[in-house]
Amino acid sequence: MAGLSFSDQNVSPPAITIPDDYNAAHDLVARNLVAGRGDKVVYVDDAGSLTYAELDARVNRFANALGELGLRMEDRVMLCLLDTIDFPTAFLGCIKAGVVPVLANTLLTTRDYEYMLRDSRARALFVSAALLPQFDPLLGRLPFLGQVVVSGGDSPGHRTFDELLAHRNTRFEAAPTRADDMCFWGYSSGSTGAPKGTVHVHSSLVQTAELYARPILGMRESDTMFSAAKLFFAYGLGNSLTFPLALGATAVLMAERPTPAAVAQRLRAHRPTIFCGVPTLFAGMLASPDLPARADTALRVATSAGEALPEELGRRFGDHFGIDVLDGIGSTEMLHIFLSNRPGDVRYGTTGKPVPGYDLKLVGENGGAVADGEPGELQIRGPTSAMCYWNNRAKSRETFLGAWTRSGDKYRLDPDGYYVYCGRSDDMLKVGGIYVAPAEVEAALVTHPAVLEAAVIGRADGDDLVKPKAFVVLKTGHVGDEALADALRRHVKDRLAPYKYPRWIAFVPELPKTATGKIQRFRLRALEQQGRD
Image (cartoon, rainbow, N blue to C red; front, side, top):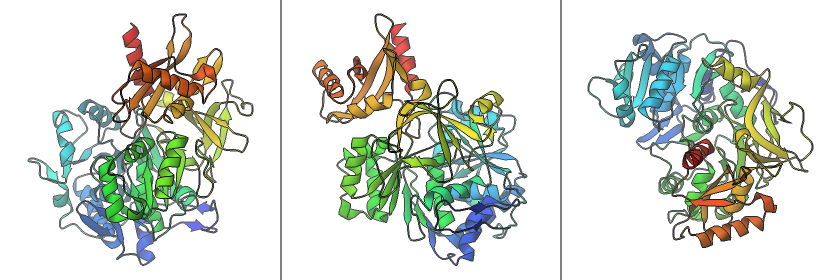
């Protein structure tokens, strides 16, 4: 299988040439064996470690087993796996065999999984034992699903992952895939409604490493990566799979949910040099008694994505560990981060500047460019854009506009060329005829010492005019009463234009979120409407 060529791997962005005949899994694994890294540890999970040579053997065993299960090129299979070495084994094994893995969020309901299995027409399911109960009601009544293989435990009536790999050949000739062939799917997180099957091609995975991980993160072979964002999430897939394999590094995998205590334990025990998280987790860690001291870690940089990182939160987390926190934005549709801060050039409160290799533009409601400083919808052009949404031509046409991809996010450009997040296009409020970005009000609220998290939506007042309403999660030890609500309103007025302050404040124990940490404001709007009906 032909490899990649780079004009200069130390220049940003590199000129990447991907041959027409190309298999992403073969490239990502084989390049490390060619470079003599066979004995180097690539993965550390809760059960042990795995070298590059051992990963190669497992991937080949898995690819051979797929054929014995009757699966062929372009068949689709669902992976609903926790973050253990079985995930990269299955993901890469499928791709090497030309089978298309469909990544499923591990925190969904039976109803969600039924939708995805029917939508994808997956012919096999590879599922962690702890997640199997969510699928049990579906087995035997879906028209396309045949094989079920269980990872991480025994389950009567089903083959186990270990049984599947046992005694298989450790050599496998990669399927004759093409660079533009369908490689894998990721379902959108559902922050704005029903998830969509987002189809990516073989050439996209390694592009994310060469455009972001190498030049922006400065990731190198000596790094150890730890991502709290899980592998099923496009952000986590790049962090924990594509980046370490592309650059010969090591990754730490954690099967359990990323609580502050669980994350702190890995930061101390494995001493990763790069940590990838989300704002909600950073806030929880800073409020946790388990927060590691700087001296107990080896971090040199952290990244944040999923939601805009509030300025105060980014500064506090960075100051505690003595590192830059690189806030960036990516999407399921673009596969990884295309707009980011970078080491030595961090402006907290912004999402930074375009990642070289991607073109960005801000578009107004009339489809034209916006005036300087005005918010517009962010659109992206770059080599990692998805092929389409599966079985959803209408949504595909709305999102993929020729070479450009609509993000659905509103941004404005500050005078120095940094992009400032204004919220989702459908989250923007017009107050007194002037646009208000919920993210701006939320960022002001979380600077108050009593506030852990906040989300802002629009609510009509007695005159049917829209005004901001805030849902606030307090830190432990604070009481949500009217006195505190008044204090929060004054706090926002002191920091923003007066018309932007929240007229109503509701104190809530938690905010509705996707499994990837994005606040689901549409659910807050629905609850608000139900309360008014």
